[in-house]
Image (tube, rainbow over all chains, first blue to last red):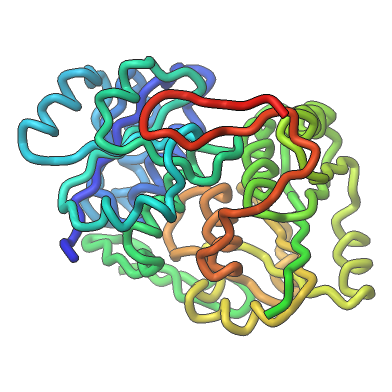
Length: 176
Length: 176
């Protein structure tokens, strides 16, 4: 089992409407151990929100906006990585995750409502997280957790200024 | 292992700002087999979006707005259910899910940014899905999937008008 290097490619992002959802996509990716997110749109707000979290909570998660999705996919493949596109129309996650897991470098495409048809052909795997409409945020979370065989919750975030002490009730944190 | 009856209680929802995120919370709950969502706010838009999905994609998921959260929690407990509050400050999901799983009826509280302090005391379990900031949508998805031991993807949705045929590439649906 390789130690996965996962990066998100967020496409179809509309700067006003999708800022909050795309920020949740990025933070979910970070919390579950992905390395960063390429954003195929210009939106400093998303990059700044994520940078603020990284500054306080640690780790090296990157967020780069203004990325061209075609060249991003091409470069990723040229360097030997595979491309997974999360879509409700794809093959069901439990049926395909075993084929994906042996690959070390995975670019995960997370679309907003409309995705160019070309993406389906460019992806090595089109993966459905249930074949029901729900949320790209939950699809990404479930994909990353299943990729890590349900053990993706114990990542280290070096350089954090704050850390939570898990509690039965209430809020406990410690400064670092 | 009981067949879980899970209902969401969404609190802290602000009608303008949170409509999209709360809709994603509801749709995620539905896709992963929950029975419905109580919304502790007045927001017809969320209820209508979810009703539209249920109408097309099937099942009996309900969404009820204008719910009073204190009486909702009280009634749920009076009927023998337990209350789980998802919060980054809680005990880590993998450490506590084994204690939660034997319970058949579970009310899952999903808060927006600010949650009344009282909730931490009212909940039977405060559960963290990683102790990192990310998204209530991904927290709910991961909680429900772990509750079902990673097998929560095969729910039936009777009465659907449309169904997806999982495909390697492209979009295939069938009308029913």
